[in-house]
Image (tube, rainbow, N blue to C red):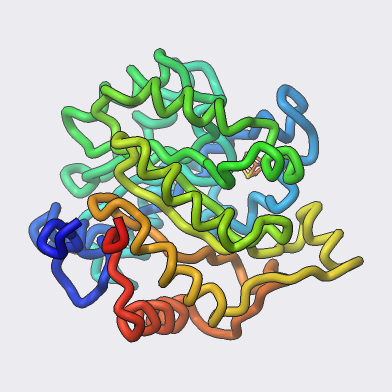
Length: 316
Ligand code: SF4
C-alpha cells in the first residue's frame, strides 16, 4: 500500500480517530454522546444464554454514575445534553444506549424506547448509537434501526471481545465468534454504521494472537468503527474476584501503548477508531490502575504512536 492511500483524517493523529471524523462529518460542530440506560437486561445474566454475565463485566463500570441514578429516559436525555453543553460546549448529540444489551427486547418495545429518547432534542440530536450482543440482532431489529436512518446516523455497536472461541468460552461470553460473523452478514447491506468492540489482554492470549484481531476486522468491509479496549478488572465481576485471589498479568500503560503501535499499522485505514483504551469508574477499577486521567492516558498513547511513527494501515 502506498502512503498516499492511507486515509488518516485531518489532525495530528496517525490514526483515523473518531473526534476528527465527527468534526468533519458535522462541519466542525462539537458532537457528544449522551449515555442512556434503557433498563435493559442481558441474556447472559438472566439465564436465557447464561448466568453471571461475562467474567469481566460489571455493567455499572461501563456507565457514568450520573446516568445510573436517573430512572426516566427523559431525564437522562435532557440532563445528559445539558451536562455536555455546559461541560464540553457540545452543539449536537448522539443518543447512546450503552449499558447491558440494548436490542434484547421485542422490536415494538425497542421502538418505543428509541423513539422516546430521540424525541427530546429537537434538531440537536444527530445520531442514535445502540450497544448490543451479536446474538441479539435479527432482521426485524435491523429494519427497525434502519428506519431511523432517514433522520439520524445510526451506529450499531456489537461486542466482538475476542476472535477466539476458546477465549469467548473462558470469559463465559455465551456467544461464539461465528455468531458475530452471522450478525455482520445480516447488516452487510444495511444503512447502519457498524462498530465492533474488542478487548486486548486476556492473560492466555499471546501478543501475536492479539495482533491477528486486525486481520479478522479487516475482512469485513461493513465494519466502519472499532473500539479497542485493554482488559480492565473491575469490582463486582467474576474476574475481579479471581484477580484478587490470584493476580495475573495485565497491561502496563507502556506495554499497551507499544502494543497499539504494532496493531494500528495492521488495521484497515478507512476504519474509524472510536476508542483506543477502556475506562471505568475509578471506584470500581481494580487493575490496571494507570493513575492518570482519561485525557492524560489519551495524550500518552497518542504521543507514543507519534514518536514511533506508527500509522494506521501502513503495514497493509
Ligand atoms: S459484557 Fe455485555 S453481554 Fe456480557 S454480561 Fe455484560 S452486559 Fe451482558
